[in-house]
Length: 346
Image (cartoon, rainbow, N blue to C red; front, side):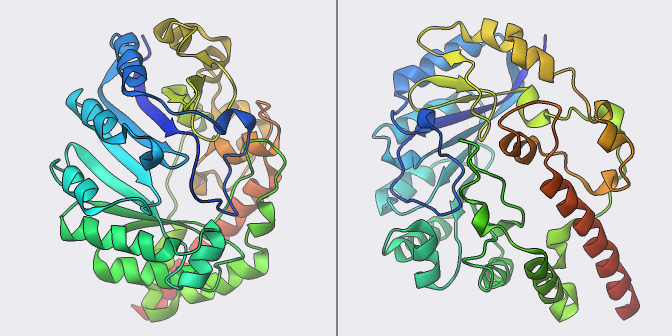
């Protein structure tokens, strides 16, 4: 039996921010909150298929808009799951952080917060919520003061392209784990309405030069070459042992891929997970099944993320996003150039 390794609970479909790059744009991500009873029902139905250590992401929309978010988080942790809370932090107060501080890092892996710039005007321009920067930074400071593990997420876009390197430097200097996403994938309604924010080739080249400053202090963002075997890589890996439960009870393969599988009120979740034709199909699709991948010379630099390919092709399988593939070629070039430059400095 294939075990369920990842559960993604979008406990709140609504969000108080309207970020310019957000991919959650389809009609099934607009309304609804998962209740504590809903989550208990999900876990009850999944008890026979849960992996030994299932990872659970509690997210949204904005998760803390759900009036039962604390009870849901406490319940999930009580089931022995390694839990992450994704939030923009704007609604977190001192008593909320005190609640989170009760849990060890083994129980609460992290609170992931999106921070787009250290400039309040730029950050607020991304979120389209005035005052969001001040509230988000206040949450970060409160969490750190109470020893709650924080993870900073920062997508790189046109609107913050001159500012995200400072976020990286700040996070590194403060010892805060962080991630910058250089490549933005399209919206879940397949309109690609957010791609005007994607960095251009010229932008990538500018940032590459920036990443090499101070002996390559930020150049880790490009990653490294890692040997891979196409025959062992499930191409849609993020959805192979995962289920996403949205605020209205809809069930999807994964966050960002809102192919409707069923609803917690109408379907047996275990049977759906084990037998749904779409899930059965993707579990048998490997990178080696793509002719383009078999003849590609950058496989060792690719993370085989399914989201950009699905969003660029209306959710159709076996179709690649040429823009993402081109980005991976550029990534290889940057990694090789970086390693050559840094080796000469040693």
